[in-house]
Image (cartoon, rainbow, N blue to C red; front, side, top):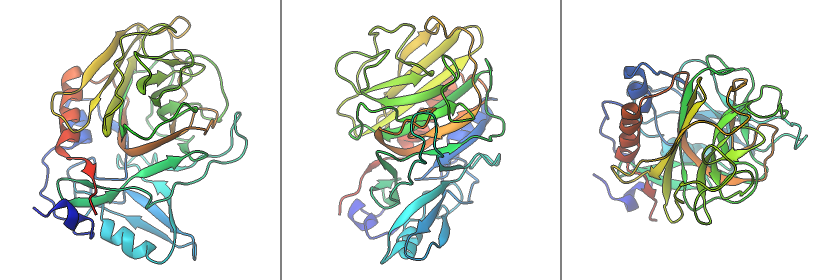
Length: 336
């Protein structure tokens, strides 16, 4: 295995992993309907595009694929294409085959102008012990969206989602979300969203301490449990990489989980029970957002490495296996 320092030179060495997050969800009969990652494939047999770069010097587009099916992103290809110029992430490709790609978010009810694309090379890092990759690094005013999705949960239908994010890049701006939102970029009230939130915005809900917290953005409210008051959602401050999960189903039930994305057995169930008052029956609309709120509120900062959504309520065992796959990816800082 090559050293982390060697990885900084763009040298990739990868040993195939038999099961990746969306393989695990599928085996548990809760298949992914959206699979997004800048860092790696989320299916063992996936070798297609992960994301599309746009070079500002000439407007050229270029898709970045894994180095091999099921592998990490090809950072050397990324670096070669962007050499001598500036690149943005033009599109985050949906690996599920449903076409739920994420493009820069259009204007909405909160911010009427479109959100911007992220700097494609702002944060290099390492996965699988020796493969340099990049992240989607949001610096405010940036976000992605798809308002015309396929297979994403609507109404009170069940769904599950996870995201891997940075534990040390966050703020209290609204709202660093990944998940289900309104299809017209407007705020339609309580229950019209179901998304993972990461940050320390103390609005309608919060966890213990000063944050940051994994919470659910259910529209017109960020919640760490079933009310607007503090619940036992341990802060994850100090972690470099964080895995966050939210899931919900009919019958007024949802759950929040989070933990150290580099440590086996570190996934904690932070809440599992009824939703807050006024959210008993959800009215989800099925758009997908990343880095913004449902009405294009884009004042947050954060980092996105990978994430996926299902249209079923995943079992705890499946989520533990997905979490272990995240740990097995060996997220770590790049040492130059």
